Image (cartoon, rainbow, N blue to C red; front, side, top):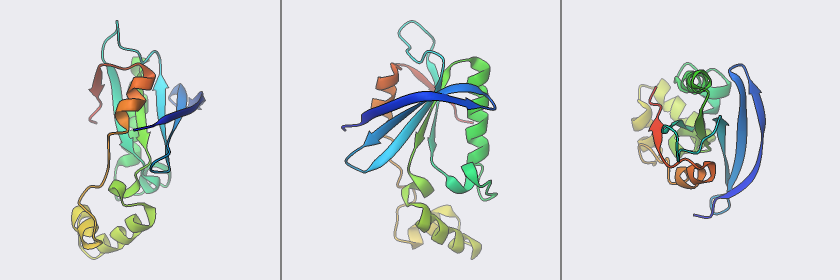
Length: 152
């Protein structure tokens, strides 16, 4: 996978100042980010606390009550801030990988009684189309060789 690192900058948040790192996957035409705090290299430190978070516009930015994605993202940022060190890999794979418009279609099916998996399958998708292989080169770029997943 030819993931390309693009740029880093500071990201002031309510949980403190993080660093934000932009990456591009030219094969899939997607951009992903890592949000980090502290030294992510794990050579001589404890494993790095990470959260792998799939984009959820409706939950992360719009406060949708259909999911707890936004709450999970904020809680991960809070936990990393409290520890002073960690990373969030924010992957651009909306709606379990089906995209934003198809996610809205799935919401309509959920209004009719389907759960998330059933709705995706009725639309012709797998239950979960997300791809986490992009995480490895992101973590390598950050210098993280040992990680602990934040499963909150």
